[in-house]
Image (cartoon, rainbow, N blue to C red; front, side):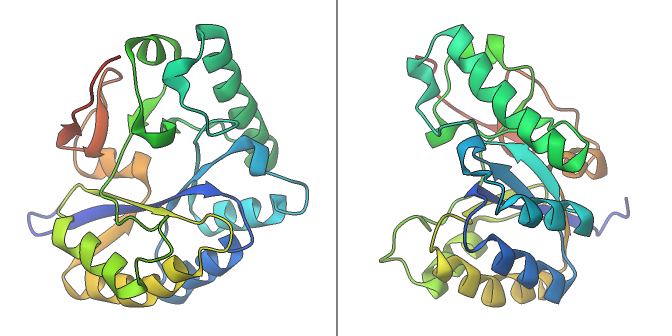
Length: 213
């Protein structure tokens, strides 16, 4: 890595959905990749092609649980099932098992750490699950937080068109600021950081702090 290189990872939660194709089109427009954290129950037969399209373009497919439940309320067996279901669905489409996991609501406890043998990912968010937050506000929130090694957390949830619109503001500005886009797993590699399974990462250089319940 050159000393002046600045790497970040763009990621999307809660898909696939009716806006996932539009998100992929924006990524293709600017020639950047992202990581999609999928909810297993959302991976319908009709939406499988969108997942494959993202993967074939160079995006990473990751795990965001089966049902998007608060997993701190589940047993070890239930936690394992949430992970196994979504990983199996993703692997059936891409041929590759996910290695990255974003816990729903970024809610984590020790039982989850003990049960889920994946890298836990949080991210710099922009409240883009709130319809009242405009595309420009979403963009400005990300720009005010992001830095080298950072992971951007957005949502390709059903009907979330403002996030699709925000990408036309966000991506060009990040490119202008000298950032290079990669996937979450490759971000660790490019930044020379080794994931620690016991941490939850917003930036590969500094983990997200969470309250163990």
